[in-house]
Length: 359
Image (tube, rainbow, N blue to C red; front, side, top):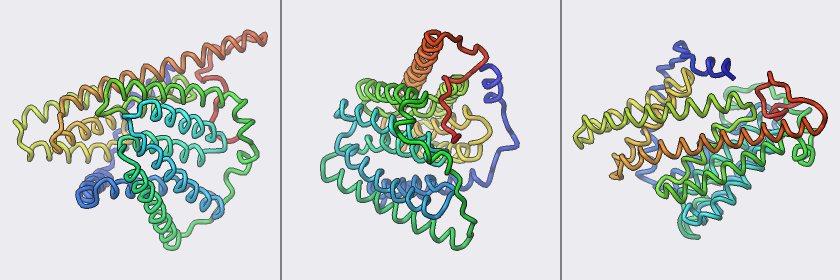
């Protein structure tokens, strides 16, 4: 575990990418303009296109096409339920988080492509809860997600036509597994733990931070990993980065004296840093992301101080829940091993054999 912490705490300065930083600023600007013109519907379509493009993983044309269709359809269905419920319906939001997170984690056993798509749909389910409204809004945003998926499919098709790549069957071995096999494997146990932790974080977030209910659940999703060392490292780095980001945002707000021009400059610097330093260190990436979120609240007239406090507390709560989940898993693994007559390997840093890669 200490070796993984040292690795994740290392600053890879060669990974600074100014080009991506500029692209990040442009992308954030386009999103702001898009939302200003089309509102939440436009944001949903844009997020759908982004998620579907990210879900397109290497493989045969048939597998890729099926993945695009499934991601679009499931994303639209998730939007329908999530937007109808919103975080105000605490128990519906909690149940949706549990089901989507559990299933998405379980299907990651089919290979890296399935793992990416599952994670994206889990994140989408949590994010879509913030768009909660009435039935009409749910239908509109479900249609918007479907439209975004169609747009993404067109973009992928045009990209492949311009830059063709040889297709390959990359997940044949993983595809021989069944959901039943996965459910009975250590991955099934991890799926249950992760779903329970995310659901608990969603419930607590909705009750304690109603304006920013999803932040604790997102922390669990991004921190809780099969390998305990990686989970602890991610949790520590995310918490430290969040704290630093809150401090940075408060400094900008303090020196701005309420002037939007200064806040906008800070917002753009945060957008640049988030993209340019993404691969340098996870804590630094979270620093810029947190500053971006807090400053965005100030720009839209919301309470930045409340957002900063909620962000920090929700991150700590989410990380603690993830750590407890990993601890429960390791305890259960040790008990199971002892009951089987063996002893757990003290050198292992994994929660059993919960490997999400094929094979």
